[in-house]
Every structure is written in C-alpha cells, then in structure tokens.
Length: 158
Image 1 (cartoon, rainbow, N blue to C red):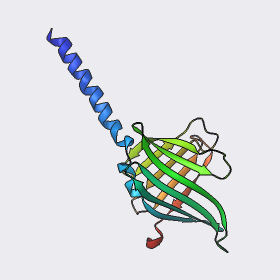
Image 2: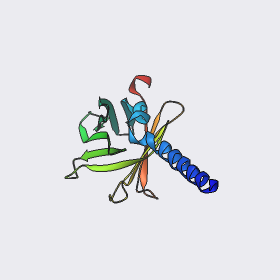
Image 3: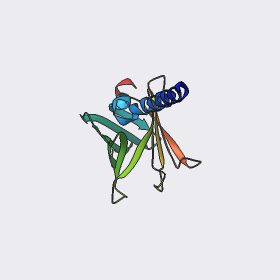
Image 4: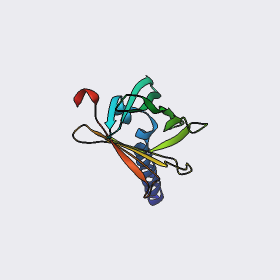
C-alpha cells in the first residue's frame, strides 16, 4: 500500500517541478533586460529598437530602419511582448503584412529569449541574446539554415 503512495507523491513532485520550470515564461520578468534603446549599424543602414514597459503584462516596442547617409526611414515595425494565457507572445506588426504576426516565447533564460511561430513563412524563430559585454545579438531565422543576425548596443554606451 505504501508503494503506490510513494509513486503518486513522486509523480506529483515531477509535475510540480516541470510547472515551476515553465512558470518564468508566463510573465515578462525574464525580459526586463530588454527594456530601453538598442542600436545596430551596417555600412548603409541603422536600426533603432526601443522597448518600454506599458503595463505589468505588456512591453511596447518599435524598430526603425533608416539610411545612415541621410536618416531617411526605410522600414519600421511596431512590436509588443504580451503576457496572456500563461504564456508570453512577441507580436510584430510590419508594413508588408496585413495582420500582426505572433511568436510564442519558448525559452526565457536570464540572458536569452526565444520566440517561435512554426507556421509563419519567415521568420519562424527570433532569438534575443544578451552578450557578456552588454551587446544584444538578435538572430532572425527559419529555425534551420536561412536567416541573419544583428548586433545591437546601447546607444549611450557606444
């Protein structure tokens, strides 16, 4: 009689541990380091990504790509991180899509956030990784071979 109780207790502990590990990805706390302004540059373009806390369940962001030569805006995105239904979603509204695209947060480490949407054409995976030197590396990919990386820094810490 004691063995089934032990098995049930062990199973309950395993379920509780699994739920405890999943809990951080259900709120915005692991993403707080993303707040503020980030800048990336290439030979001819500059990208400025900005995040602010709108509420306990929403971070609002924007990404603006401009020409370095004359600062003409070339592209822009409205971004959101939204905690709802025990999950966090990265929602991007871009000019070339009629509707926003949502990516579910699948990894929420202290210095790494991964968002995935396997049904989207491209991208399917976004990875934000805070580097030890304070830079931010953003990987945009199809989850396999196709993609690119952006290297961001805080503009006030150039």
